[in-house]
Image (cartoon, rainbow, N blue to C red; front, top):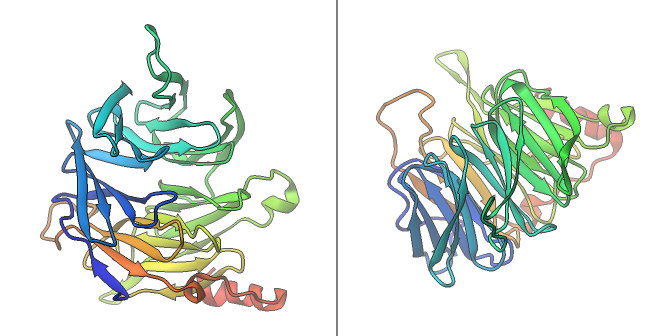
Length: 344
């Protein structure tokens, strides 16, 4: 198989999310501003199924089996079973549904909305009063991104706020933090080992932080510059739209509006690899569950308003185990690598 190939029949508007299935490495789900959520077999390179919202879809995720969840500008939270073709509207928010994540530890969906609430949903639950909604929890600002890791939920909001919850008790906030990044958060993703999370901003930076509130652990957090390039002698700074942790090695990929994708060793603070630029902004990234394939959405994100741009495309890049594995460095080398690799 080629090192990289293009997926047939991509959406015909901005791609908001690409998500590999948690246990089927060939299955990829894609949501788009064209109102669709589509399922692809990446090995056969064909679209298998598709369903629609009434407006742009901003995020999607897999649940159990072949269940898909999605939300967007129509304010609805939808569940669609690709195995049976049956869909359900679980409920709605009062504004756009910006982010969705499925908690396998609790078997329910978590949504974040611009209406300043986080919702939890279970399609198996049902009642006259609340239907499939298990609860809604008021936040101080609009939700821009969220992610779950075991029993922890990380919510990134406007105003550079990051709140951390225990999913078993959403009525209390475990930690209220201010982002280490000085500008608006674009994405947050949890580490695979459950120790912390990475976040990215519109100002070409990524921060790596840890859940443990002790002074020792907090001293390990750091941020670094990325997705910047000189244009006519002036450094141009691009939003970092996408983050994705490798499912096995714990390294992570970042994607930016510069069209760049970079692979990072967060533990050793080192850049592992920078891939050739994609035709336009990278809007989303996802690793297959076996860690062998990285899905890259090359899709203009309108950071610079209306302008001519490359078509919306999805590329599937084969990544070798050696490429994705962290480089183990002695402590003295790790500190110097931070300066060389990350531009700290």
